[in-house]
Every structure is written in C-alpha cells, then in structure tokens.
Image (cartoon, rainbow, N blue to C red; front, side, top):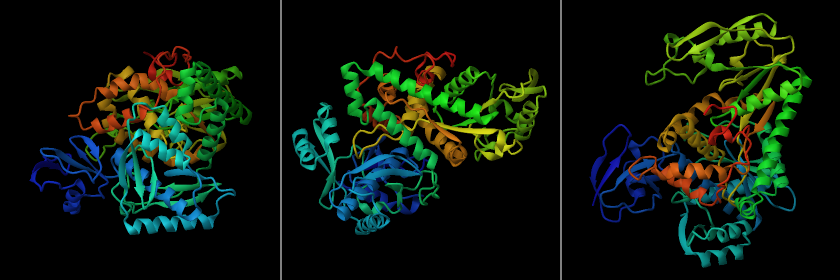
Length: 555
C-alpha cells in the first residue's frame, strides 16, 4: 500500500510502501526518533484522525503534536477523562464539573458533600499516575442515538441528555471507555493513558486545578502562578450566568427558540456597561491618570477603551486616548525575528524611552509633541499632535505591552491603573465538554478579518499559532499586574457569530492544511442555534467590533 508521509513542513512528502492494516500509531513509532515531540494524532489528507485509525491507500500523512491546536485539545480531553475516572475510583460516583480555563489548565468542581481536601486531591493524582503507568486503552465506541440516551439516563447525565435531545443531527453518538468507565466526549482522544506523561493536579479554592503542558513548551509543565484576578473574573461570570438563566448551550438555545434572546442580549449589554461604569468610578476615586489596557487578540480592546473614555467624560474628565503603535522604533532600528523579518511584536520594537518621557511630560502639564508613526516610510512624524492636559485628566493607553512593567519603568506606580481584558468563556456544552476561550477569540478574529481586512478563514487559522505564541510571550505573563479584569464575553455571542463564521469555515476545502481546524470549529458550532436577527445589538457593543456596525470602528 502506498502513502505519502510529510515529516516537516518545509520538505516534500516521503513516498512509502506500508503494510495493509497499518495504523498511524505504528507509523509514528517507526519515525519517533525523527520527531521533536510526542505524536498525539495524525492528519490524513488534512483531516485529524486518531492514531488508532488505519492508513488509507494514497493518503498524505502528517503527524501532529502539542504545537497543533487540535492536538493540544486532544491532550486536554484525554487528561480530563483520566482525571474524572480517577476521581470516581477514589471518591465514588460524585459529579465532576469541568468549569473553565485557569493557570494553564482547567478549574473543576468536585461535588462532594464537604469541600474536597488536600488528601483527596493527592489520592486522585496518585490514581491518575497509576492509570498512566498502566497504559490502558481509551477505547472509542459509536452507538445509536437510542443506546446513547439509555446510557445517559442510567448515568444521570442531565446536561448530556438535554444536548442529545436538542441535537437531532446526531444519529450516531461517540463515547470513550477507560477501564470499565465510560463518558461522552465530543472531541478526540489519544490511543491510551500512557500518552499523558505530564500533568499537575492541585487543590485550588474549593475545587481542583488540572494543569497541562503548553504548545510553546510541550515537554515541560508551566510555572504555577496564583491567578486570583482571573478566578474572580470567572466567579463574576458565573453570577452573570445565573442572572441571565444560562449556564449551558441548551439554556441559550431555549432562549433563542422562545424568542427571549432579545432580552438576554439587552441584559448582557447592560452588565457590560455596569462593569465599565464601576471601573471608571474606581479610576476617578483613586485619582489614577495612566490607564493601561492590554489583552489577547480579539478581546475587544478598541471598543472597551472608547466606552471607558465616555464614562470618564461623564465624570467630568477629558481623557486622552493613545495607542502604543505610534511609538514604534524607526524601521532601520526595528529588531528582526529568527527568519530575518522585522519583529513588531516584542517590546524592543517600541521606543520605550520616548514613550515614558512623553507620558511624564503630559502628567506634568507640559505641552508634548506626540509622534504619529508613518507605516509607509517606517518613521515617526512630529508636529501633528501637540497636546497639553489639565492637571487631573487621564491618559488611556491600549497596547499588547501595556501591562508589562518594562513598558512604563519611569512612570510612578501611583499614577498607573492596569486593566486586563479578555472574553472569558464560561458557557459549556455540558458538565464535561467545555468551550475554550481561545475558540471564541479565533471566531471573533475570523469574522473581523473577513469584514475589515478581506481575509479568508484559511488566513486567520494559518496565522493563529503565531498570534498565540506572541500572546504567551508578551501578554499572558503580565495579566497578574492588572488592577481589574474586564470579561468582554457576551453569553449570546457564539449564536450570533455562527451566522457570520459558518460560511467562512465552509469555504475551507479538504485540500487545504487548515481544513481539519475548520471542521472542528464547525462541529462545535453545530450545537448552537443561530441568531439571524442581530439588529437588537447596540452599535457600541463589543460584538459590533467584529460583526460590523460599530460606531467605534470604521467600516
């Protein structure tokens, strides 16, 4: 049987003769010495498949590891199943709720009568390690809808029953079995427990934190940081959900079906506005004048900064809004990346000395000649923005390095107020299948790229790993510097984005390397009802920054 194996992106595929019935796992083991990291799955003709799947005649094969987004989720799904199985072995059939991302992992709730103890978490971790050493198979089973429903009823899996009843397109249902324990996961798994070499289990607050390696360093556990602000932001999101009566996708779908979605949209927008008002009042109360805003891609920073500016104006101030892009170094001084191309992402690309001098001059009431960066000539232009501020007026600064202390070393800390913004997704499919924050952001970016930049879904998906690598280096390490977190997610937004994103994702063809990721996104969007009429969304909404119609973004 003939196949073509692509070991490296820059090399031509190898033409191989392999034995009929050979699996991707067997092939991966044959070439393991030539691969930089452990293989978790494979791309067969641009579609991600389990390693247990047999090779097909004439197919092109590419191995994927943790650096691939789908493979990263495969690792997380598999570790989660092992964790749930271990918890049941140690504690009995107690409900486990997979909540949200936190500290390079997932925060979970264990519904024991009393808060889970350190000793119990240690016992679960020991059992997980034992399951990994045993290298037990994670067997995939496909059953009829009726058989799946029977199993879910027997297991008391209420949310899984709801989502199955609400998904008539699911005629066949997938579940995974581990040592007699079975659970329904909508993602893919590794072949066996032995693949999950690295994880960390920690008691955190009243729950348990399951942590994983990250795509940038697949063979190393990331350092632990106590992300109290992030945890509190998710806790606030839970309160918002309770107020809106939406905790799972089925709740949202029912609101759409009943016609109550307009009220949900209005309430969600009102909660955003309330939060922005509270932040503005705190800035005024504390007399802060340097307002620093940072967050990952597609967080809604532009809209947030302008809405915050309006609320500060309501309090009688006259804020100045600045972006750090005007402080790029001259093109001739721009640092280069590993490929010899200009690197505009790192802090070295900015004229930090001039930025600090200008901000201190403004704080002191001196007239300041602010630069305007000319991206065509690659130089800063002066004389266009001579500015002076009143003694108490603040400066709102948005930029990827805004929370990095090295961006503002000469500005007194007493003047700074740091805001971290991100859509902290809390809406899950069911108790064990969550929607990653990263997916929400990528859908936002995809729709915006198409609306404002003429890009295809292929272009957005292709760029996303580089975007995430930049965030890991320049943004995420500094979120602990924030005085406040702003959760820019709208609980209804995936149902709105679906209308715009689906046609873009459908346009990705099987011949393109990005096909598997587009297919994965389409599968989870399939669980959402679509909001066709989004006219009720106000023109100052963060969502308008992506779908169009924003008063803050030029069409």
